[in-house]
Length: 393
Image (tube, rainbow, N blue to C red; front, side, top):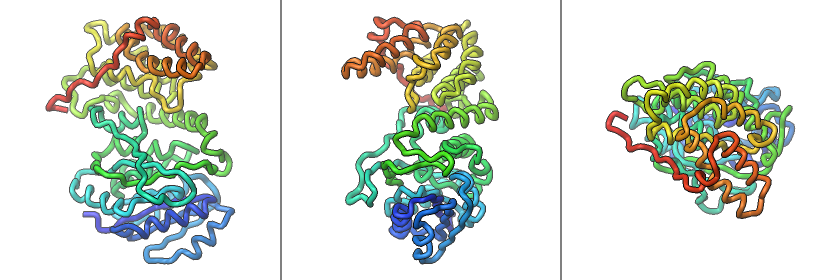
């Protein structure tokens, strides 16, 4: 049973937003037993906000600016709760968030963490009504949770709450990552322990343009796509060095010991997060495995995730066109390459609809030059579907 709950808030130079985050903790129908704020060297009015903040369970820690991961590890070391929720200083918790997490974990003693959906809202104030821009979770995808998250990170830090024992098991946040440290943590948790899903919104995520990142690498949110891609690739390369093929087996209890789905998933996962060197190495391993029999529906659907990067694929027809050339030399079966190309169909249509010929030509280069798929074939392509889950999965 979850007897004590800790909420951990790392903060840096967001005094006004921090006040709202603290107020959101007071709204909870199930109050936190301790709220730990780690001030990562703020130079604005944060000290005054924290001095005025009163209430039971108040813990304030201060440190020289070292980045979010360092602040989180400092807070985790101080946390005494049976479960810990990390709340970003610019986000808010709906009133029943902690109650929903505790109920989910109490109902699933084997689960290491609970998670729900999140809804976005805009502006510097609190929402006047419940946000309705809810991030979807694809429940048709039969793959293990950490593999689904690599394709699409639908669980930012405050959308999940973890048992202290689970956090101790996977270790702290990676302080070498100036960004993507939250993503790295949820991937490690999802790989290591079972999860308890919550059919409710447990986070209100603020969309705004203030500066993000540690002091040495601060940037406006609208300018951080390249930085996120950079650190996602670093993170993924580190995980790939530590994980094995078994960690990429897409199904919970795969039938037999066929290595093909795992090796293909490993290649695609690394490609999606732009660890291209690792991805190409795994594609080379995967290609000969199809000599005995053609790809099955699960493998084709995994392949269709190749170009789903949230950070775009523009570099593949620009400064990293060498990746396309190397991919063309991997010897992948035609059906796999056609599945990989499928997302280009709607991207190409969107580019043509707005008259962006430069992007349209670039997408054509990916399809024809990198994947060997003609535009005529692409125009008739159908999206590969996930196969029906078997009783063993």
